[in-house]
Image (cartoon, rainbow, N blue to C red; front, side):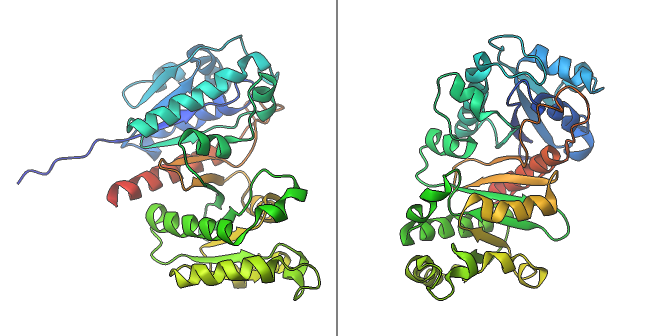
Length: 331
């Protein structure tokens, strides 16, 4: 019986804010595509002339790179872009690139999307209310709840998921409920099994308050909300443990036995992860019907066009997207 080979994986890369480092990092990352990902096809979404110019600025032969494995999904800029100089006129262009990637992934054209950084302020200045990639992806894919997880790559990968994302700190306690935590833990457990190949993920959960509430003396969220959510998650077969004080949880003796940490808010877990892995970390959106990864940094306007930006995080994001897409195919 003759086996039928499956088509190569097809990954879309959105090049993000045109004044930032996204276009040149894409060129730098894909310069090694033939070696790193010989069985993967890429569609780079952005203005073709901009991509060629920024590639040239960092010494990448863009014309030689584009071919059977790397194609351009051309969408023209609204106005010419200058490296390092934001222009709200291109805010809707950035969103259009993201829409093209999402539509292609939902249609099955792309197996995954990788997003270069965008500038939230430019999109808002263009008249489009915008909180971030994570929230926009949830809205566009009609996903009720998604989870932001950052993953550090390496021999001992560190993964940190968030119970809340881009909220003012004063709004965090009200956003953490038993039901919301249970939903988040269910998504994290499910996607770590399916997309990361972990048979029984072990999730360590932080408290919200200093010292995890100090038995109620520094807050009752751990007693009234987090612990009951963990009990319900355990009853569903989810290995979630805690709540632990966040200031002592991020130690090797705890993390060596964990697959993921669930932190209660953005700046509780991510500073630790970024300190340990910045430049090689990956932002993953869990809970979506599509695979999406991104870099762990912003637009770096001061580095745009200089050739000094590091493509390590984008390369790691592509690696992770390829691995996740393969796991979904195998499943």
